[in-house]
View 1 (cartoon, rainbow, N blue to C red):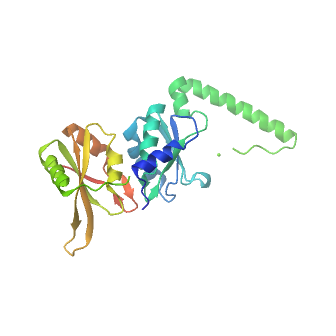
View 2: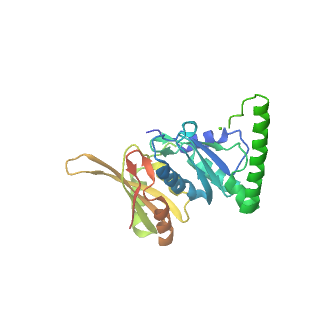
View 3: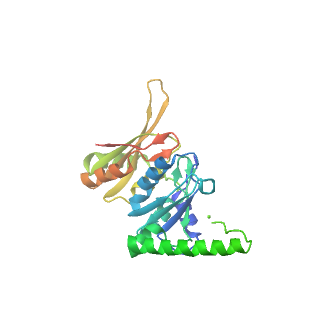
Amino acid sequence: MAVATTSTNGAIASTSTAAPSPTLFVKNIEGKIKKPELRSQLLSLFSTYGRILDIVATRAPSMRGQAFIVFENVSTSTAALRALQGFPFYGKSLQIEYSTGSKSKALLRRELGSDVLLEQELEQSKVSSSRRGEKRALGLPDDDDTEEVTEEVEGEERDARKRVKTEGVVLRAKGVPSSVEAHVLETLFQSRSGFVEVIVEDAVKTEDGEDAGWTAAIRFETRDNAESARSALHAVQLDPLYKLDLELL
């Protein structure tokens, strides 16, 4: 599973040449995901960084593996772009950039109101129909519409585990496969209110001695913080075969 490190994420994000926009263009999405599931998972992942007005994702051949995420403002879309660039989603690394298109209907509806937007669309429809009629009369064709994770010394690990037991409130991520690295969880949780740290615990073995994944303790300042994070991120797909399993301790 391809996983981008934190340092790589920053490098990728900085190469975007498009002007900052509330709308993000997301590419390299697994193309076999059903539309309702895709919209739900994208909403869970991206809404961590701000209010989302719309998600445009279709299974049309020209849009397969792509989606548009419309945020309320540029600051939240920028936070999402920087944090999730290269994030492993269904086994593929997300490629994110600012959308270069015109404002989405969701943003226009918010700024102008539904009635004004409808009038604009009707007027545009009349103009388009008139132009198509003129082209057909002339015999012309119509236009086509497109970190590396640092190892800690044993003493620091013991201190961290002790803090989990004595301070704050903990969410436990269970059965995380070896293909998902610890910094992926850090990226996912670091924007949540009250987040303190992610502490990797020992790998789990089945009765037959087989690898059953590893667990992690995600520590928050308050119970409300932890419950809010669990509500938003439980069952987010991190791997083609694994959905994040969070337990509030």
